[in-house]
Image 1: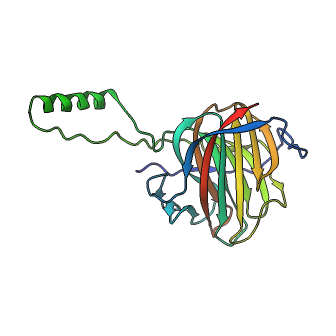
Image 2: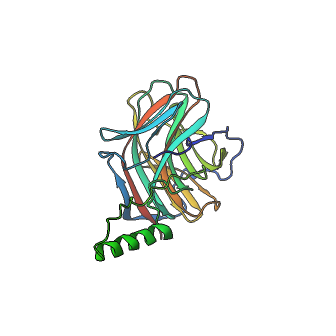
Image 3: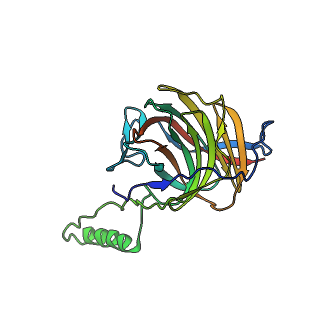
Length: 256
């Protein structure tokens, strides 16, 4: 599967749209049925690609994103059905040493990566093939439905930095807009080998971020109603970054 590189430009946070609530989330969101689950034990179960400046690959139970040389471009992979209200859970490990990087999860990414495309011409060919078999005519060799690989960068990002900061962003095309300021937190485990559990909630116009089971922020934005889930990373220096994601679970988000 090929596609244009998955990148967008991360801009500094310049303003705060909604202050994070330290006392806890204002909305109660329940976790419903599992919609997507990946242990990354099989290839072709999430987007993979090798580009000049980055690689996205599944390796031995982890989804690895490596950015070779950082220039604040976010590289991400996405997959699955087009979903609206979701809770995304994933474990992520910092593999590289430097702190000048960020990584996390995304929801409502526009695109159809990994989805099966069915078109009228394909259905007509299938019908033709069945008719040929009934008439004992020549076999018709048919290719399986094409796998779509379309994305343009629209969606929401929930990121942590190697320095211990976190933030929520809206991406549109190659531009990223802050929905919360970068904020320092002792909740973020730091350094090579550090592991963090991230949870992102996307329910209607409500977005919430949890780090290591603790609530850190909530914002409201109604720019995007649905899309795919994704995993992302970016580096702010020339040395790049590498992170590994494990145990991805996407569940239905149910508003109480």
